[in-house]
Image (cartoon, rainbow, N blue to C red; front, side, top):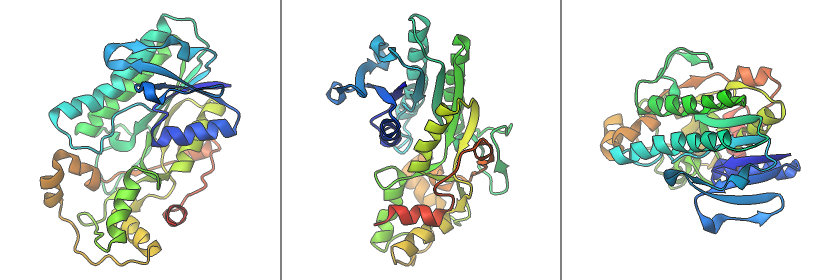
Length: 301
C-alpha cells in the first residue's frame, strides 16, 4: 500500500510516516522545500507550492489514501496577516489537491484529514461529542469550520472522508509539551487562570496510531482524537511537576496578563474543551496512554 502525506516533515507527520514504514506502507509526501525531497523507494518526496497552485502530479501515483496534515501552526501571535495564513494554509492546500485529482487519473479512495477540537466552544460543563451542534464563535472555530468544509468536498469525487479533531498533543519532540515543561524544570511553572479549564490531550504515539487505524479500518466521518480522560490545566501542570520532582510555587497566571503578552492567541491557554473519545474507542481503537500520568511519565526522561 502507498499513502500520500501532506505535512509529513512536521511533528505528527514524522510519527505517522515512521509507523507506515513499520507496517510496510510506502509513503509519498508533499513538501514546499526542495531541500526536503527524498527519493528512497518507500519514502518519496514531491514538491508543491500551494500559494502558486503548483503540485507535482506524480505524487498521486499508486496512492490509495491521503493523510492530510498541512497547516500553519496556531501557536504564533495572531496578527491579521498571520490569521489569514493559518486559514489559507489549510483551505488552499486542500483545494489544490482536490482540483488536481479532478483533472487526473488516480487510485485514491480515502482522505484522512487533521482538524482540531477548537471547533467546540469554551465550556467548563459540556462534554463534547462529534455531533455537537455548537461551534466556537471565535477565530479557532472559524479556522476549523472552513478547514472541514474544504475537506468534505472530496466526497464530490467519490472519495471517502475522515476527519480527526485533534486535542493537545503531548510529545517531547515538539509542540506544546516542551513549552509547558521547560518553566517547570526551572522552578517557575504556574497554572493559568483558575486552572479549572479542561485540556483534552493525546499522546503523539496514540495520535499517529489513530490515523493509521482509521485508514486501515476504512472508517469514515468525524472522530475526536483525544485520550479518554481529559484533565484540568491545574492537574496537567501538577502532574508534570510531580514527575520532575518540582513544586508549583508561583501564583496562578492571570488571564489579562497573558492577553497583554499574546493578544488573541491567549485563548489557546484558557479555553476549556472537555471532549469525548468514545466514538473511536467503540470502533475498536485501543489507547496505549489513556491517563495523563502514564503519558507524562513516558515523555520525561
